[in-house]
Length: 503
Image 1 (cartoon, rainbow, N blue to C red):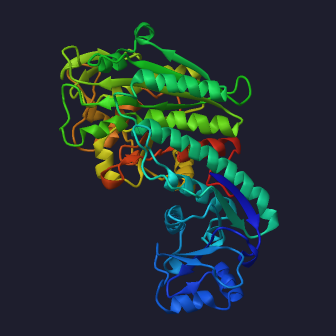
Image 2 (cartoon, rainbow, N blue to C red):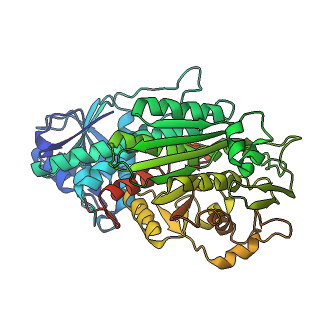
């Protein structure tokens, strides 16, 4: 998809379709009012007939309005004007794209970017428009013998900006949005692939290809190398699978030599049956998404490299399967992690923390300025926060604030949960240094508390994306979250901004 920005009033645009907003009670937006004026009141006349009253998400496609050089006009309902906000802007943009997919318009000019949103500037609106459009047009058809109906005439989207002085800002916003969208697409594609295709080896191969395309240094450790490093926790999980585990290292050096990197650590469980503590059969197919943390690291690394951000970033993806087998972890087994700490495995389905703890210990060798791990770690986080926000826990308040601000800006939101010492008691074991589970109460927090035992020597945050990494039901599929949050966090580090970016 080609995106560009343009300054100019709608009645002068020659386009396949103009897109403008209408608020409830048939109130035309400023841009729709300009179209109405030049077309001798055609919009007002049509609205009076009751075809559209401006309710959120309504669409009405009009053809050949008088005195207008554009072939079509798409009106989109924006709801109540006083309630128009970030979420509604994203929704009306999605509805507009969905309506346009079924038309013959190859080029559209959208004036939704000129709608007023409290606290949001043109850079934010342009960037969101691009990201939302790309997400709405995404299809996963790689595994189908015959792709579905792919009538997509839409090839170019022009986004309106109020002033010529906004063109440079808009072009920069498009570049950032396209890099983030490409990273999101990579993460979604990897997540949507089935477990018999996207194995640890396949994930490692994709990382190597990514390195070749974007000049990243990629190293893949095999089972023997992990054993020599003492990664007993990670290797205990992979014992039940015929697929060999991989430890993937991506190294991006856009900063100065010697600058401490930021490390991203993503859980790469390419399929999780739960091991001996086997999961229920219903919906177990969705456990192919248990590598979405690792996929988000690959997607973020691609976005960072494409944007050529001036900082150093390390991506670590421990990857394995978790299956029942005669050699698999058994409840009650005790394993030794790379840190030397021992773990009593009370539940083999709490395996993500076992592979992550060794990866977090490995990250320490880079002397990172900060470490963020990303994992579809607990169903408890879904119970606590649903599917709208990722769970965030951290041993550093500033790092937590920076991640929360990045999530708020990108609408890839997170919510902070406590990480108090009192939760550590739930991990006590009579037989090892710790247990790998702490019971039902506060399950998302005790999982993070387990990881916190391996992060005492650096600033660290944990993102539990179990509720946000994929959708179930009719819209089933990977979301690519939290690539936008992570990329924005890294962009902010290059600008030395701790709070929400100001444009």
